[in-house]
Image (cartoon, rainbow, N blue to C red; front, side, top):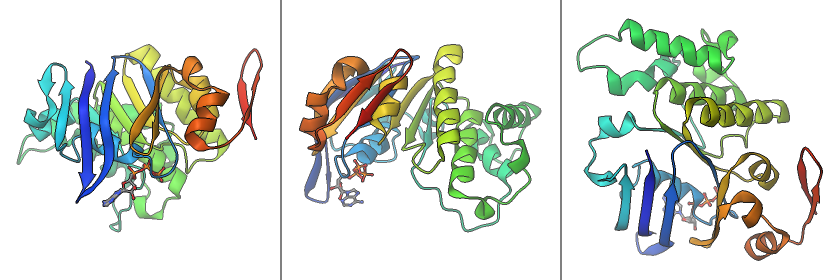
Length: 253
Ligand SMILES: Nc1ncnc2c1ncn2[C@@H]1O[C@H](COP(=O)(O)OP(=O)(O)OP(=O)(O)O)[C@@H](O)[C@H]1O
């Protein structure tokens, strides 16, 4: 399953924030969306998940125009992990994850054994067993983030789109989650698209990146070709040093 974005523009009221976006996301790859604050990452992600309707251009999901795909059918193909997940109500974590099964549960029907099995699998795969009987509104930001990633997994989609999935996590869980997302690409052939602020993480884990600046694509392609001192300076206005070792690439300033 692939996503093609063609000549996409987007404006909030009259303020244009995305200009002529052209992109292709292929099955089984890990994509990073990079760019300074306000460059349009969240807006692009909301368009890719169908949360915002695009005004100009096209988004094609597996040869179908995305805005013609019914909501439930779309939710079986794309799962979304938002930047902020605020719930005021005291839902149990396992019930939040079960919400990922919503597209599969018929109206007025109870969840099936298969739905509960998918929830258990998602809990096991994301290592959140100790959290499952707790209330979501009593968890830390990082714990909540892991629950929402589990919910996306239970949704059993080929594509998972995440808005800054690791920005609230400590370095241990940053590493765990990124490694886990990478494994989903390799072992389950899922397509992962994540906006990231950590360029080092993108450099080490994403196969391809898109760099946005002021709503336009500054660069896109294979990560190692795109993330250079020159593109970082041009996009973020910051001179950086890049240090390459056999195992890891560091970016310092
Ligand atoms: N609901 C909204 N109404 C009006 N303008 C908005 C709205 N949401 C975002 N914007 C504007 O659109 C532009 C792009 O915002 P967006 O949130 O997509 O950027 P971002 O790259 O995700 O930023 P950050 O890294 O800070 O999260 C910004 O100028 C922002 O002020």
